[in-house]
Image 1 (cartoon, rainbow, N blue to C red):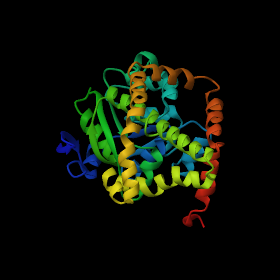
Image 2: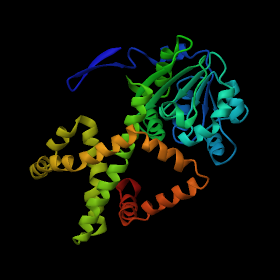
Image 3: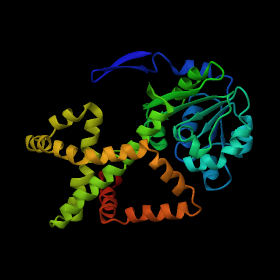
Image 4: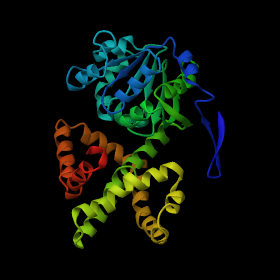
Length: 347
């Protein structure tokens, strides 16, 4: 493993240079990788592994998602099967269903986890909260995870563009003595950039915090707060949206991704720099208690309990769609649809 200095802290990472794709192919040459679930992570990971020359099959129930898999090129009876048949054929079971669906399907999956097989996750939820989920793998199978730091859609888009998402990896159970090697090979196979090591608990704790925090929850809250203040003070929807969302996502975040926040600041006006430097600490001080509250809610398993309880309800999807529609119907995002339609590339 390579040693890299992350802001003064030296960490071990795995790069494609030291673990190239060809090595991953060799490690997984005799494996049949069964991707169970073709929802959020399934398509990107399955297609990337197939394009990387690995033997991949998909297990999915008949329906809209099954039809999507067919449209993506998976062939019924050849590379696309009902879940039970895929579980039987697979030697590495990629368990990529939602957390709630993993709980529901687990008794079926467990029956097919015979000695020497591997169970692969991209999230530590099911294993970390096993007292709540009931997901306890047999002792004679390898259990590991590779967690790309982004959506399955982003993973696929970056792969097609010749890039990659960074991923964490972790081994929970090494029954064969080869779990770590297989884990890293799988992480390379799904299209990861570099890999950093973690464990199942840290992965799920950081992931739940990030999703509810800066990645999704906090950013929507901040967007809404600024947009509402601008609108309340007489600014038009187009102006409020452009100053709140469009400039951030289309102009400034790509600069941050390229070289960091300081470089983005350096490429803005001196007036913008002055204001940002004056105001970032008050925003940190105002929001840090919320992040501490959020982390504690994750750490005490309150977030896991809430997720399992609500996402397991029979009418979960109906309620979720209603909440998403409420967000989509906000003036800010209706204004956003109009703004996006006016982008030069859309005309």
